Length: 116
Length: 115
Image 1 (cartoon, each protein chain N blue to C red):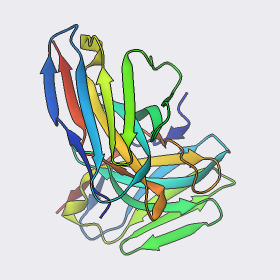
Image 2: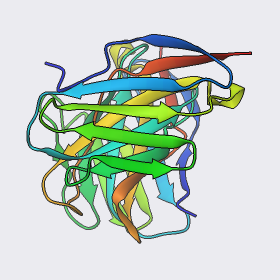
Image 3: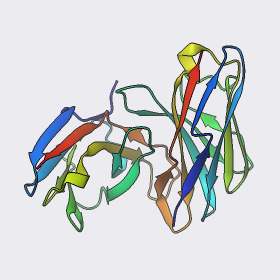
């Protein structure tokens, strides 16, 4: 149980384009989903927290207009990187919290974004 | 400013021996701590957690110890197995139990189990 999927697993795009990443909790309802970013040899950094049906809460330094988060249902959250630039290239990981393990976060496999 | 610190980037341990991974934190509001295992290009996998009201939690080969006064926790793996080779992240969250808090991660320790 507690499986979280992400799609796509990797994406390469041109500078200036937008990229959408999906995060799904497959076997439980996620009351909250989180988006993290990991640069090489760095720790995972929390970008934003999203609750179903409400606006996401962004961490300091994360541009909400650049990283659009939608949490339309209890099993799906999307992160859209708008007008991506090479410095946005990173490993984006989502996690979901909910169900019986309310205090644990279950992570997706991550999405490798490369912006050319 | 790193609120969760893992000062050892890597650790090499012989198979069958005990692996001890350390983690320090600075934020006294953290009340829940977790350890995750991560392979390259994959998401972290939850290993074990501990609430601040406890000082020890054990699950099979994994034991986490928490020293609140020292703001220090450690993960013990015994006996260490080759499949344990991975990067281990210490993470912490604040607020009351059950709250939807994002996690603050350390930079990770790369554990290498030698045959």
